Image (cartoon, rainbow, N blue to C red; front, side):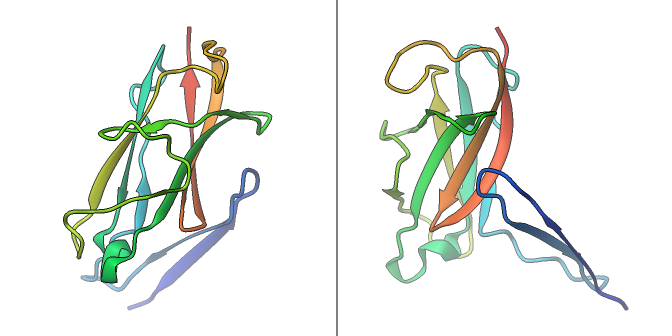
Length: 147
């Protein structure tokens, strides 16, 4: 029974250390505290939804995680800040709550209308990076706008 581990250093847009492991047979790894999922549809035009889940453990003892979600172009310029579905609030340093705090995950969705921040102009076709920040930890994925 061996334990294997790996790590990769990721650069750009606040990357960090990505790590994983393969445990002993019969043992399942613990559920991640934060899971940023792929936006859908992808590619998209004109709007998209970005789902993410936060493990109920993040809400233990009344803690309210601070969450931001930002969209950047490939030059690392801020393009947009999506809104949290259900509240309509911009996802900038929001303190989230979860009705099922404990071990079950809490699902959230963000919505981006495809417009550039403060202009109302539609984003150009291309690759964009979206980054979720939860209590200072960063999670990043890419998406495609196709006209």
